[in-house]
Structure formats: C-alpha cells, structure tokens
Length: 100
Image (cartoon, rainbow, N blue to C red; front, side, top):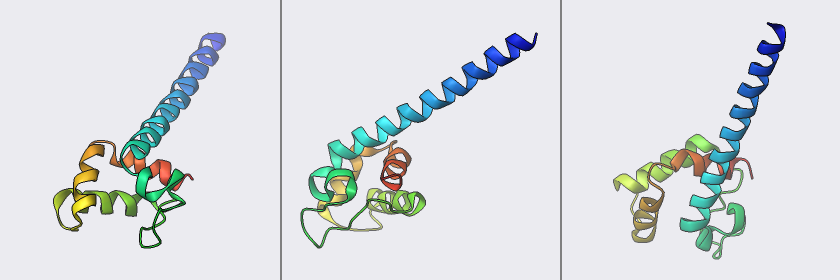
C-alpha cells in the first residue's frame, strides 16, 4: 500500500510539473508570435524606447492591460489588433513575462 501511495504521489507531482512546463511553453509561444517583434525577446528589449519593457512585470497587472486592450478600454490601433492573437492565453503570457 505504501509503495502505491508513493508511486501515485510521484505521478501527481510529475503531472503537475509537466502541466506547468506546458503552460510556460504556451505563454512563451503566444508572446513570441504576437508581442516579441515590438517588446523584444522575453519582454526586455523593446524596439523603441516608447514601448514598455514587459519583462518581470506583475502578472495580474499584465493580464489587466491585455484585457483592457482587448475590450477597447485602452486604445492603440496596433495593440488593439495584436492582443486578439492571444485570446485565451492572456494569463500564460503574463506568467511567462513575470518569470523573465
């Protein structure tokens, strides 16, 4: 019985670890496809000084800004269009950036 519990616990830990890795990949992939060309690699090297550095930003703040651009509360023609490429992946992108 104890061996079964240990084996099951190890499987659960492995599954949780893989789930976190998959979510990190989703965030990185979504960021690279929609955001990196302006905000730079890992959000740390924007191509223009007027573009914000996103690297290390609080994830909740980043999600709110993305959602505000998606809803039109914040207005910028480029951002309003590009954030629609990451619908459903907002949290993954924000978590990816926060971890950089």
